Length: 277
Image (cartoon, rainbow, N blue to C red; front, side, top):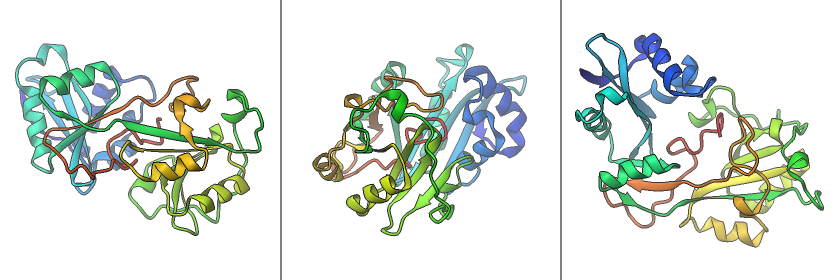
């Protein structure tokens, strides 16, 4: 078996592999999305294991952000497990940056515990519903809202070049992604919270959300302004497809210790992949 970096010439094999292991219409089954995620060494790399038949049997993706390589999209066919393939794939990612990850399931947590990684602050998602809803329901809040955002559309950053999304840059410098098909504005960066809220409600959004690590002190201001942890709200974390009562439950881990001031930004890893969650 051979382990190496993937490139766009591997796309046909990658598509076959991703079609086997992921649900239909997963973002990685889209060539344009794969290239956005892994086609530029500044932002991420894709590492693969090839069998003797030259088929992809393992994959590790790494998204680069905050001086770390965030390990995502990890999968190894069962027949190849226990042969140090993942060790080799992780080593390829580590050659770029120290390793970190976000895990949302027991399998991921078990893997990193066995590897003796450090578990840090869990990630938290805060939500605020437009105060025009006096007694909001899931169906009311999570439905299409008609917004005129032409003056705020922006695609200057790599994150905003993600295929299929609408990135917004506001006058105060706050940034967000419009998901008006399910009524919401997903906040990336907050510079002036009051101005951000005012503009969001003026445009006609039903709700806002913001995801970060527990040690992000901006959360204090969110709580003062009436934002709540998502499980106390009615707006689910998974929006494509829309899953009622599915809330954020993500752990942040790293291979080596990190500075206690380190804060996880929404653009790190794939927990903030707007196109799918």
